[in-house]
Length: 232
Image 1: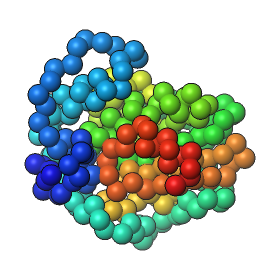
Image 2: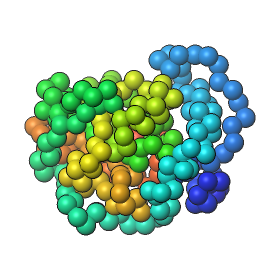
Image 3: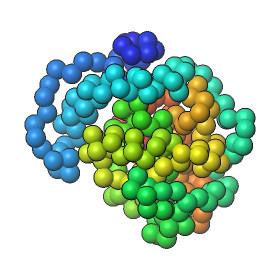
Image 4: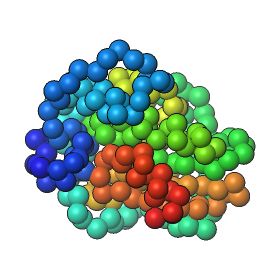
């Protein structure tokens, strides 16, 4: 199946393009008016698909200026000021604003007592990236893991997209890209100036326990939680 937006080939079962993150199939169902807190995951997939089609044109404009559709390319860390996020290494500290302007540091997040999962994504223009947040948020909370999405777009852009998807999970804004660079999240899979679809799990002791870079822009909850459990 080829993405109608960027032309990249995707698996037949894909819901979102693994390169640009937009939907790869038309929507033929209308979701019922059920709150996201009680809606079954299967129904949420339909709702997500309806929402992402509505923003296709706007997302294309925002994404094409930042994305090179090359899903099979080998990830290469950005050459300027880039860090790495290797397992057992110390997690780079940071302090970033949320979309509402509240500052949040890694120390604040670790003070909650559990592991902290940082999610670095393409952000605005990648509907699959926003859909990923509610897809795994409940499962992570059940494991006692603090989930922290980080995006490099402006706070206003991110807040608007988060509202469109009904996302209540706070999203941190790394507009300078310094934190994304410190964790080695730039320059992967052809996405030169922003992250692709990557995760870093920080343990209670402040060290990185797991890092994973996906070559697709949406991962179903069961697949993701399995990867996390097995540290794939």
